[in-house]
Image (tube, rainbow, N blue to C red; front, side):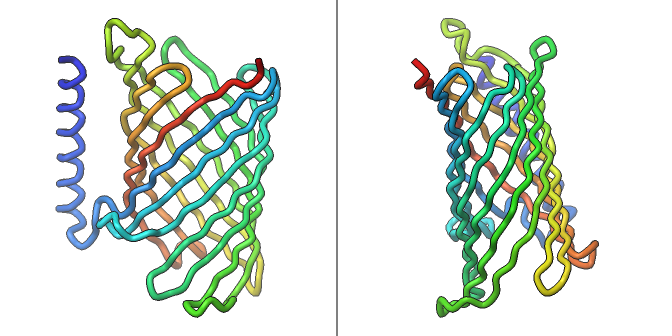
Length: 248
């Protein structure tokens, strides 16, 4: 009963929020994209591991048009229990209706920290990306290529609410809230600067130490070329996190 009461209250808050946003921005959709993402953390030894995630993104609020898909993986090293560094790479493919496609190859360097204050979990992630982008015309011909850096900082707070099942105390329902700032800077034929902010909020279910589901609302604002161009949109972010231990 507690679980269904929580779901009912959460859905009421979401509906009220969507109605408020729709009324204040009648010409814009509250949810413009859906992101589906799978995360895997594999422990190879006491210090070394492999962090991988795969994503599939849909756009335009109808949730049927492919926007982007990607594969990202990195070798991780655990400096201590609360600090981890990662070196990795990713491949992204994006589609724009009537405007061709883009493919990206990214290299990233990352540091993760995590802390716990009583039952509240707090995590930081700092990531630097080197992005190589190829823009293709509809006919498949190369139209433009570019390179830029992107600097990302994200923090997340995980507030536990209750145990989902009394017989299984490891199944925990929580609320996740946080923010990510992304800054891009590069030079091709001109200096390109853009900033992005992602506010994250939503429920998560931790089935056990190795499996976790979450559904987050991601409100993103984008400013490009020092506010000459700006945009904002909402994303429904559905994720599943899984851990494996091959260290023996």
